[in-house]
Length: 127
Length: 175
Image (cartoon, rainbow over all chains, first blue to last red):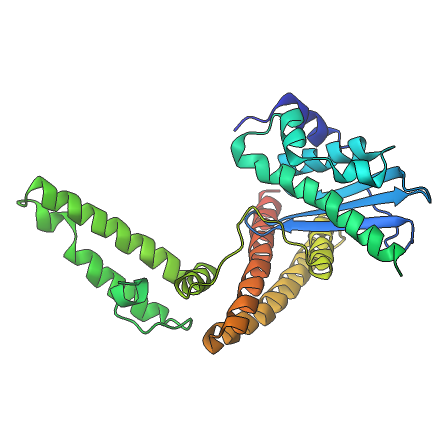
């Protein structure tokens, strides 16, 4: 199966690969996985006091589409408020990367990673 | 007729693989194309379909994770959609660590020792989880079936890791 040019670009030059300190109160960590293919995705967001995402990092073990989806998401969320980031839909990710139907679950994983990170941030804030 | 009945074995997670294999072969002989050389086209077609069905059933019962999944589905346990992402954070953190450990193997001073180390860690964790799942499947109530289902999903991550380990092993042999 051929990957789209955008997937290949993110796969070969992934943006924002890395890790942040998950114990830092301003860092939100979203961990998600897909049992069917064994993919594991970690998305971390550095969030300012007024709720703006200042930085994003990811680490993904999975196929090219999963890596590209998470790489793209780190670019998209930077500068957004957590509310705006929470509205990013997998369909937009799939469309941007021209993912074939069998790879749609990779974009779902990336959307779920954002949501999981926001959940983590909210639970940290309420402590 | 469920797959266990098909092979005339007890419905249980603990399958005697030798018996399964011999019953499988006996059953396949009954639908072998040689037996249908003089049969009608329709009978031949049915025999081919039966043979495929027997083969599917055998593949599922032979593999512990597929067998577990089959048993849980037969019990009416609702398996989460495969597209549904898994969000047990501490489990996934561990999966990340294991994948990083595997990634480090090729950069280690003693590659063979590092690979063995990863393999032994993985098989120990797999064994613990699969024994847990086995006990939960044999307990067979709503609560135990539901946790068995969670553990089955976890075991699939290990299954994937084992594929990666084999791939790495092959690539090391090629060097």
